[in-house]
Length: 397
Image 1 (cartoon, rainbow, N blue to C red):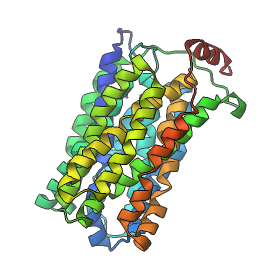
Image 2 (cartoon, helix red, strand yellow):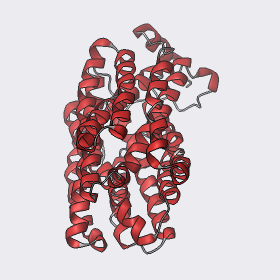
Image 3 (tube, rainbow, N blue to C red):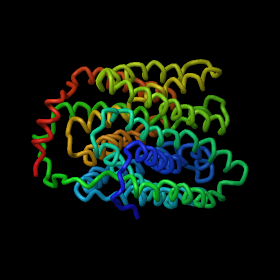
């Protein structure tokens, strides 16, 4: 269990360790999507049920994240960043042994709880001490999750095809090894304890810019989650192999991670709004090109889609934290959890509509949502330093 020590904490080393934790948690959490074609065949799932399973994990994750983030703000319990990945690893390594829809549903619930423990607590540790490169730090942390999600499909599909789907429980061993590798050094690099306000936030105290930003994240989350969940199925439907579907997910997430590092660094210089607006506006044409371009361009277009559709993730989190200083865990739970969860609610309807009208026509409509988010972003007013200081003093005690 991590605990604070008297040694001087290093924020960059802490960020790097949390990068590893994020890589672990999101890497194992990403087993579901690339294995979806195999699970559909084994369990005879419809696209609607497949979408529902993804939705369940996201809903469980998102509904409890704000509360856990509030707990992380008040109690500052970094043990949550260890328990979360542990639960995720144990749950997702069981996916290959399921024999029924009910068993797979329980795994999705457990994985959702694990992710909910990790994300707001880890994001709160990133933002615990103010730093002029806050955007870059959050981007590095976010890149860990994206990189984990990018590597995971290639590893798990190759593993399942070579050794069999039922052998996934053996992956618990490397999962625990990585967990120990980041958790033990983290004890010596925690931020100093702070007196954090514990009172409740009233709705009228939530700045309007945060409400606008939240809806922007929701619209983008619908598109990103839908494409991530059905990407392997889309590739297979267009004539690609299951391995190519895994490669597509990897490219989508890997370019998102790389783009996030660039976007986070740039946002420290030119502001959060400009980066969010530009990346969202460019995401829609890339997604449409992926769906309708010749098959030879499948991988290049999905790489470009990931670059613009996912690169704004860390920028959005930092922008939200700056809207409500002193509540980094709570705000991170609202943006990383609840907003993405509301977006994930669309997975089941998207799957249902795809069963009726076809997956590509439905995803063509979904691809317009980042452009709608970019339009909404025009109404976002970026906080100035004076606004942040004033807001910090307004946080209830």
